[in-house]
Length: 266
Image 1: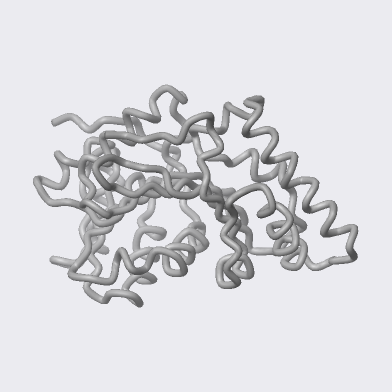
Image 2 (image 1 turned 90 degrees about the horizontal axis):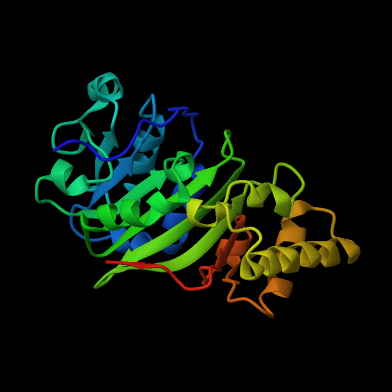
C-alpha cells in the first residue's frame, strides 16, 4: 500500500525532542511499563537521532521497549538501518497509514512531531484517524511542534479508548531564555496554529500573558519562578496541572483542547 503523506524537511538536531520524552517519563510512564511496548516515531527526519534518543530514555522505564522509526522517504530509511537492532530497533518506509507498516501489530505509543506542520489544517483529522487505527487500546499519540533547537515545545496528548480522545495540551521550556507567550503561539499543534483569532484560543493566551506579567510584577526574575507563578494564576480559570514535578521541570499542561469542541477521532 502506498504511504499516506509527504516527506518532511527532515531537520533533526540532537536532543531536539528531549523535553517531549521527559514529559512522557514524568506523566505517562505507566503506559510504557508493562510488556514489550512498541513505540513508533513517525517522520523522524533525515537522521534517526531523536528516535534513538527516545527509546533509550524510555528504556529507563521498561528495558523491553521496542522502537520503530517510520519515514516516507526510502533514502532516509536506508540511512537509518545501520542503527537497527534485531527485534528491538527497526526502521521502515511508510506514512500515516501505519496499519500497513505494522502488519497487524499495534503500537503502544506514536510520536508524530514536526510532521503535520507542513500540511493543510483540513488534513489533520484524517491523519490522526489513520494513526489511531494502529494504536493499542490505552495507547497514546503525541502530535506537536518544537523550535529548531528544542528550546520550546508544544504538543497535544491523545489517548486511545473506543476512539482517540484529546487529553492534554502541553507547553514546555528549558528556561534558557525569557518566557514569551508569543513564542509558543508560533509552534502550536497544527489543529490550533490557524485558530489564534478563535475567541477561546485568544482568551487563553491573553490570560497566560497577563499571568506572566503579574508574576514579573511580583518581583520574580528567574524564568522558572515566573513560569510556576503564572501557572498557578492561570489555574484559577483553566485546568492546569499544578504538580511540582510538572511545573518545575518546565511544563504547562492544560487538560483542555482550547478549540470549540474537544476533538475525538474514531
